[in-house]
Length: 116
Image (tube, rainbow, N blue to C red):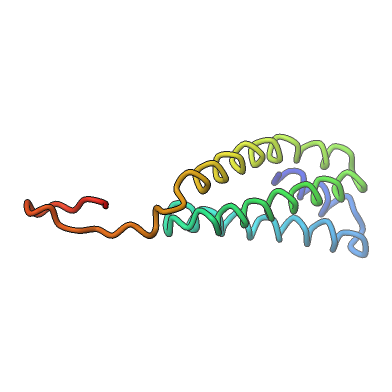
């Protein structure tokens, strides 16, 4: 995806590259947001929405890149495939852990905490 954006930046006139590169940086921002949402805060619902938006952003970016440079658009395909897989996993984890954030931690009398 780095080389694809490099191609767009250097091959497309400045007057025509704002939309494709804007989409690229938008999906990149969602990519950066997904990791702390999913792993750090364990906000699986928010992470699912985020990665769904990222998927749409990547697809739009690939389409816009391909409009200007076929290779740049094709170079986004592995990334879209990976995010499709990661989206499925994120949704599955969210769906199967709906009560995860609502569980209270209580002591078991031995200094350890366990979920209820």
